[in-house]
Length: 111
Image 1: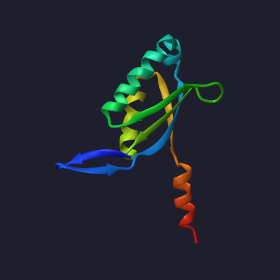
Image 2: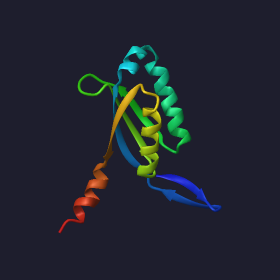
Image 3: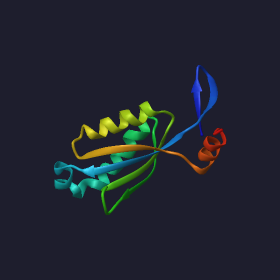
Image 4: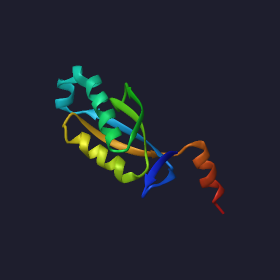
């Protein structure tokens, strides 16, 4: 949770967790030496958009990069994903993730 100030009033905002999967494009792999710098820029761009980057991992397998991020809503995450895709270095796929506590509430609502 995070605190938000709206109209002078403080309120708690529940932050949702997302997993952003990324693959280098041809352009991105040609400039792969800059990947750490680009990840730092991504973190700053996310912060300016109200999204928190919890972790970034470079991976083996189907995806080149896995990021764990938190945001108050889907629109903020979608905006961030589109903004970074405009650079032409990566293509992304974003998944909404649920914690153990979230799933306990979800399955508790089942009849």
